[in-house]
Amino acid sequence: MVFQDTASVGYFRCPALGYHISLRDLASTLNALGSRRYHMGIRTNVPLSTLSYANANRPWQIYQDLAMVLIAHGQKLYGKDEFSESIKALDSSTIDLCLSLFPWAEFREHKGAIKIHTLMDLQGAIPTFIHISDGRTHDVKILDMIPIIAGSIYIMDRAYLDYQRLYHLHTSGGRFVVRAKKNLQFYRKSSTPVDSSTGLQCDQIIRLTGPQSKQRYPHPLRRVRLIDPENHNDIVLLTNIMDCDAQQIAEYYKSRWQIELFFKWIKQNLRIKAFYGHSINAVKTQIWTAVCTYMILIIIHKTYDFNVNLRTMMQVLSVSLLERMTFKELFLNHKLTEPIESDPKQLGLFDF
Image 1 (cartoon, rainbow, N blue to C red):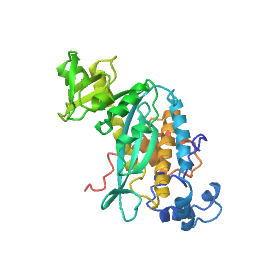
Image 2 (cartoon, one colour; image 1 turned 90 degrees about the horizontal axis):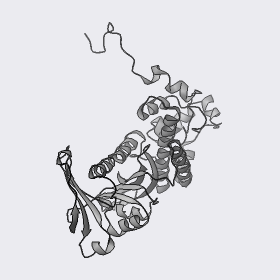
Image 3 (cartoon, helix red, strand yellow; image 1 turned 180 degrees about the vertical axis):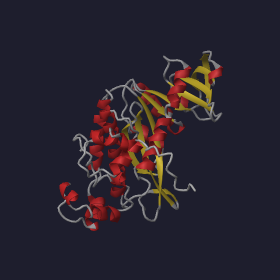
Image 4 (cartoon, one colour; image 1 turned 60 degrees about the vertical axis):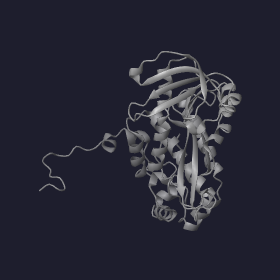
């Protein structure tokens, strides 16, 4: 697919690129393609019932496996593999659903939702672990599922503050930076001076004193407190990283924002807020094909070093998916990827 230098990539199973709003819309488009549909290997018209049946019954694990192949390929492009040390951010994003249409996605009494739990390698913005659950699954349980790589740094918000699980991560060789809760009980063993002009307030080595927390995490922790200069929030971070300064710890936590941008980007651009089917298979299929689409764009962008952003690539591909053109012809043509300068002598639409 992406490894053949052609723009005809995954039209049938990547409706996000075509901006289709329903399976009926997708079927109508495919049936209007004529000879170009034939070159995709589809020799006859595509009934809506065929798409609907495939969406509900074709195993979503097929697209999960494809996504993991693409993720491994993307990591190699950045000089990494699944066992390499790296900086990773762990977070989840909730997608609201109508409970009457998605009764399996229980969240609240009259509301449905699913969660996309993601562990992202911040070098290259590559999601290395994704788990899709119902809205009731607590984020902290995902710490039992993620792969722990010795030497890697895991950056998390306070939803993942569980001392027993963090201690397991510590004893497995992982390093972490996690935001503390307000009711943190501890005593200070030592302090290191900090530059308050950077927003840092303190850098301490502490031990937990809570009746349960001190048993679940018996080793010393590092406590870094800072004031967010933009929002003026008081942020307290806990970490087991002892070999860098407090400013670097703050930078690690700040980099967690990249995973928030990832969730925002795929929701806005890859159509995973409205689904083509109501079954759990249809929902997971659409999410995993969206992840495949994202990884294909990442791989193309990195392989050819195009001077265009992913949003522009999606817009160009959406109208060129079935054209027999190479990626270089598409994205090295500045007329396609750069705005056209208007003639100053030409009146605008609303000029009088």
